[in-house]
Image (cartoon, rainbow, N blue to C red; front, side, top):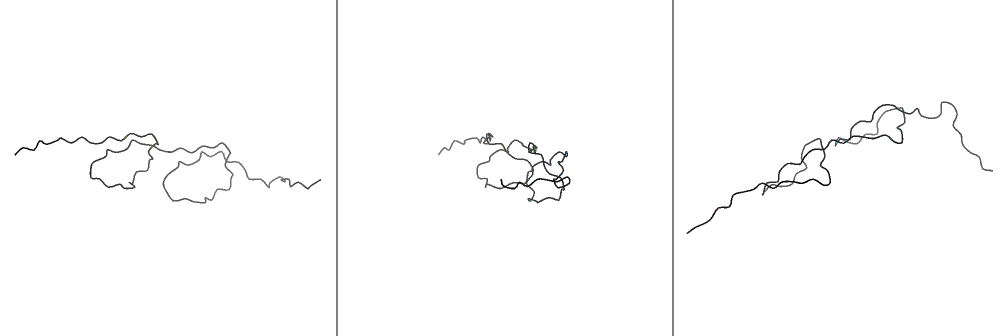
Length: 86
C-alpha cells in the first residue's frame, strides 16, 4: 500500500471570501495574498461600444480601460459623394 500525504491542521491555505478584482489591461502581477482563491470565483470585465471607423484612419491599440466583445458592430461614417462635371 503506497503512502498518502495528508494535510495537518494549519498546513492548508485559508480560502478567501474577498471578491476578485476586475480584469484590466494593467501589467500581470503574481500577487501577495496569503489566502487561496475559490475554484468557482469570477472576475468582471468592463465592456463598451466601439468607436466609429473613419476612412484613412490607421489602426491603433487605443487607451480605453474596457474591452470590445467578439460580436461587436462598428459603424462606418457616411461621406457625401460629389458629382464631377466638366
